[in-house]
Image 1 (tube, one colour):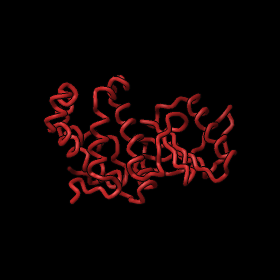
Image 2 (tube, one colour):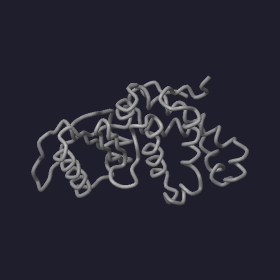
Image 3 (spheres, rainbow, N blue to C red):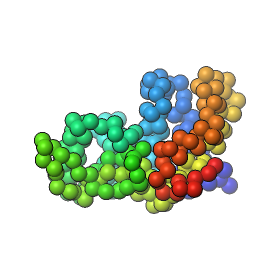
Image 4 (cartoon, one colour):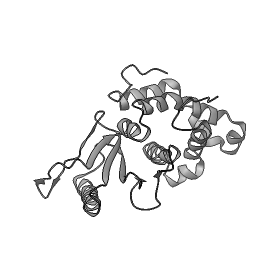
Length: 211
């Protein structure tokens, strides 16, 4: 019987992914910034959902070559300046030009609201025409696209504190990485709840979010 009860990822893969995300090596690579840890977690979890989703060593953050979906992931909706937005959009345009069946998503972990809409930008003071294949997607909607479950992201967030607790309480990992897990142990459920409600309160299933 599944302990974490998420149909789109096995208990073993979820536990291992949480463990890998908070290991010292990952923390060193990501300069110990929480926002980057969150980005790393979400970018790399989708490969466990299906063999069709992968995280290439270079190129897009996430790809599904079977469905021709190409993803750039950002932590927050306001972290891209105009130059960065233009560069990403033009990259999307080039992908669409090469294959008109391709779909390109700018996925925002913390978006203004739950959304899956055409991404329209202004390049050289000219507003670009809407293209249904170039989209701006909040993380909850992207989880829905990948898993076909409207509440997949909410279910993961409900389960994550339990998984983190299991990782922290694992004797072997605690002895091996005591500094990292001591820091994790300080993340109370109240703090996690506050983070979720502040960041995701407009997402699917979060209006009555409770642990």
